[in-house]
Image (tube, rainbow, N blue to C red; front, side):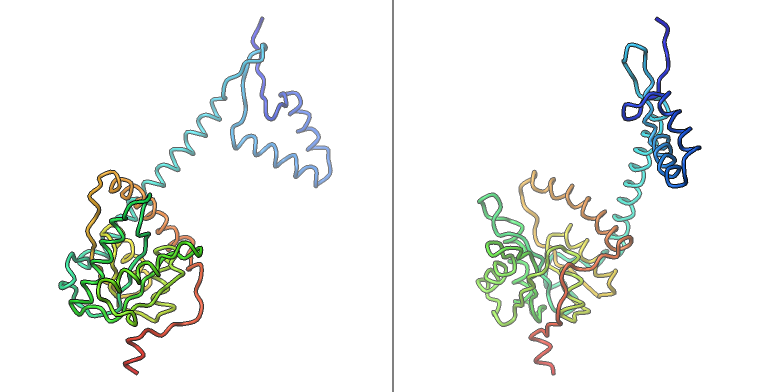
Length: 280
């Protein structure tokens, strides 16, 4: 049996598509627009299937080529954004991250970025290392006040309160700790330091990979920020997961800052910090 060529889109044969084109030419203006949009979308997406008379089919060459071009363009775009994110973060955080609290060149409010004290039923090393590092800033006289910023999306999950308790246990006065319950993301925590707490100079406490991104956001907001890096966790698998998650978070950060101009989910009324109260 001789081969015939058919174009199928949503079950329509080539003959039926030709009829649709004739209806488009002879119909009224609204009908023409509908048929025109449908035919254009068919050509754009390349969803033409060329098959044999026995009903088998294979993807059309134009459709496959278009799909490959789209996939290649998306991949190239993702690579460009990743490289741009790494370059931007490195350029604005270089020289502003230290390992020991005594090396911080300023005395300022401290933003402690939150996480849960436990992970899968075990102590979370990220949390406890951050609390140890933050308390060292108090002992070395570098911290004026602590803003513990994290997620409090439910009554059973309260990162700021857990951080506050941990810092009090490590010798930080309770009256020097302010909870920010709307630190749902790093961007929210950093921007709220400026917009809600009136801070223009600050010290950030988290792990190094997290500190770099927080300083990049602070630089975008025109803030003077330094960071002290808490020790990473010894678990290699956890470090690898954090590394890959951080790459995605950095791309998302670039989109938030430069494309969407995204603001914190919650702002609210300004909060006067304890140190500022004393200076008045």
